[in-house]
Image 1 (cartoon, rainbow, N blue to C red):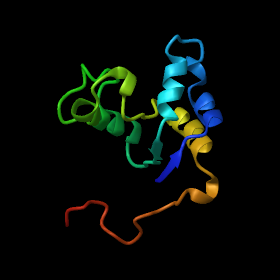
Image 2: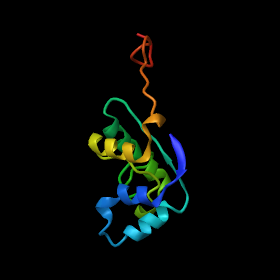
Image 3: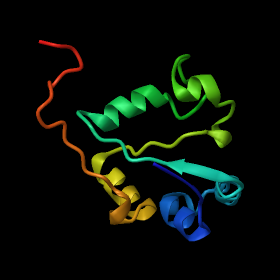
Length: 117
């Protein structure tokens, strides 16, 4: 996890698939208007689990109790992004993080569950 001011070239590459959309300039302006917190999450079914916690892209349709449902008020001010696939996450991780910033962690010698057997 790190907080940074997103460089415009990183935003341009991150949102390259949206460059022809009419809202693209406003998106880049919004995303570069203040700091962002970038994170890498890992775990079993992490893409599906994270997207369930985050909620529907359109905050008007996001369920209460999700991040977007509780904290986002308009799709153009979405407050959070999540990769839509492992492949997408790998591309985005390489874009936002240097390999030296990533920590590999294994729960060696501990229970595989937070609850005792």
